[in-house]
Structure formats: C-alpha cells, structure tokens
Amino acid sequence: MTGIERLLEIMTTLRDPDRGCPWDREQTFATIVPFTIEEAYEVADAIDRGDMDELCDELGDLLFQVVFYAQMAKEADHFDFSAVVEAIVAKLTRRHPHVFGDARVGNAVQQSEEWERHKAAERAAKSAAGTPSVLDGVSVALPALSRAVKLQRRAARVGFDWRELSEVLDKVAEELEEVRVEVAAGAGRDRLSHEIGDLLLASSNLARFAGIDPESALREANGRFERRFRRIEDWLAEQGRDPERSSLAEMEQLWRRAKEEETKP
Image (cartoon, rainbow, N blue to C red):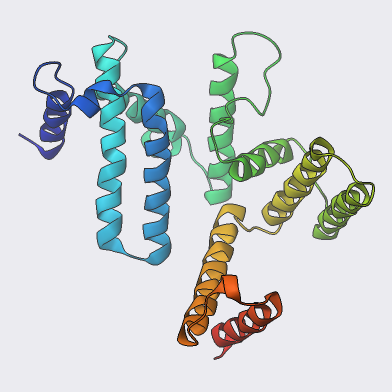
C-alpha cells in the first residue's frame, strides 16, 4: 500500500459512521474551509522562515485538507480523490502544450502569455451566460489584498493599467487626501470605510506595479511590528513595568530604539 493509499484509508476510517471520529464525521465542506485557509498560511509561514522540516509537516496538513474534501465529495457521489488527480493532470497537460505537445515557446514570458490564453479560453467555455469577463474566476474567497492584486493584474492584461509608477503614487496620495477630507468633515463609518477601502486598493495597486507582493510585504511589516513591540515589553519588564503603566512618549522612544537596533549592521 502506498503512502497516499494509506492516507485515503485513514480518511475513510475517520469519516466512518460507526467507528470514525465524531469531530471528523460532523464536518462539512463549509466548516473545513477556515482550516484549509489556515493551513495554506502555515505553509507560507514555514517558507518565509526557511524551515524545511516544518514545511514538510505543513504540506502534509494541507494535503490532508484535499483528501478531506475528496472523501466528503465521494460520500455525496460527486467525485473522489482520483477524479481530483485526473482533473489536475488533464489541466496541466492541456496548459503546457509546449511540453506535452508540439507547440513551441521561445521563453518564459511567451509561456506565461500562452498560459493566460489557455486559462482565458477555459473561463470563456465555463461562462454560462452574459458577457465573458477577464475578471471571471477570481475567487471571492481570496484574502481581500490578494484578490485586489489579482483583479488588477487581469485588467492590466487588456490594457487597463497605469503607464508609470509616479501615476500610481499620485493616485495613492489622492485617495489619502480624500480620507483626510472625510475625517475633517466628521464623516460617518460608511463614508470612512468607503474611502479607506479606496486607499487600500490604490496601495495594493502600487505594490503590484512596483513588482511587490503586498501580502508578503504586509506579513514582513507585521513581523517587524511584533518584534519591536515585544522588545518594548522586554525593556519595560526589566524595569518592573508593563505598557499599561507606561506613557506613549516612553514607548515611542523605546520603539525608535528597537528600530535602530534592527538596522545596525
């Protein structure tokens, strides 16, 4: 028995109505989704930290999510794990005619363009009604920041894009000024949410245009914030204090100290 066969057998047992795990038996497609998203982020975290042992473990957890969905689908007579494998094999073969067929591409750029043409044709074929859109297939379940970039990339492929980085910077400044205006006017929550949303969209566009993945950039920024704030807590603890009993000015000074500490060669 192969490893994947053993995993499939374990999943079947976990879902067995008589001798399975009560928690696993109770799960549905919808209840598993948050765990799948969490596992994907843990894979990303292991990669960011360069921890290959952890990555191996997290990839196993992510694979288990696929097996879980496939088992539930099998129980409902939709499809099984073999169908999932066959579908991705067919898709990869179809989208790589330069590898598995007679087509030829000169370089990676041409290959990417051909890949997008194949995906566009598949999206058009799946479109049940209405005008096919280049935005079709961009999942609403993606994190908002990632989805913003994906939508913008799709639109950029048909020419709806900025010409240079300075224009995007101007747009970010414009959206920030609109937030300032609403704040000064005492705008309500809905108006502020609208304008801040536009600012975040413009910021994600800036990252995309600059060739930066905003999700990765924000994860790194979160990491810096966490490290520096923990240093503040450590230094205050050495004095027998904590943030609640410290002034903002004191913590700002310690923040600058933590920042300088990180930037020292």
